[in-house]
Image (cartoon, rainbow, N blue to C red; front, side, top):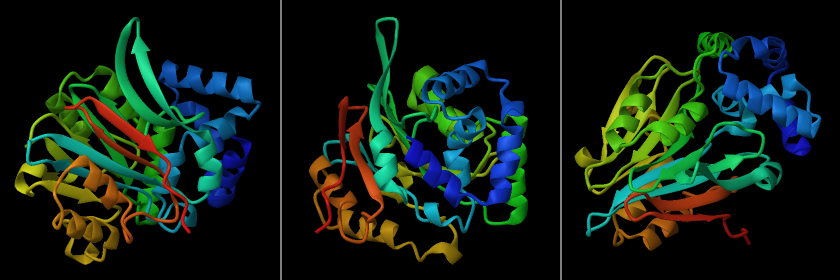
Length: 301
């Protein structure tokens, strides 16, 4: 945990660290987040300001040029010939030797009811992948802030208490009871930073990639309009100037040549040119089939 924290601090521009650490606690109108981070700080001895910064992992990853977080993550939604929806996911991060040590799968329970399964990092209150059995699956990929004004806007949103994308994903999994309800919240809730939300449902038409700006969607790609699969890495597939996205196009090429099933989906996210040296967690899951397969990638030769 300490090593992951130190690695993150070492990669964030010093001015951003000072601003976010100095104003970290102004944003906590949400008592649940505040209590979780305070408890984490008390149990680990990590100062509150640094614990807060750790919980801005996603926001930091959106700063274009932050070398630790370039080309972070990939998601796939796929429907089989039997009309079963599967969700594939690679989690990528520089410093994976530190972050893999604090990675875990969590099952959230309320009373005696199992709410959802999520992939999480210890000390980080948001989630990066998750599934609600019989409802939907979700993951994210980094979409960068490309200008100084975008970065300042992100900082302003953090200080002002705007909902963080990873926290929104957690609350969507906790409270939403259908694919359509989850989709509506991911489309419309104001968030601190741009992001790609990848959402899978229960039928052959329930799959979507939402390219989010802070205030709403920049683009929506529906599985129903795209054939049998959709893929998202870290560039805007709808932007003609961002078509040099080899991980996305390599995954699309491989999927177009094989039978669409969970085994070949797993092979796809491990395929050369899709999986990165920074990949440290992979998942193939289906809310429709109530299956969750989580693994660390095999070591490269």
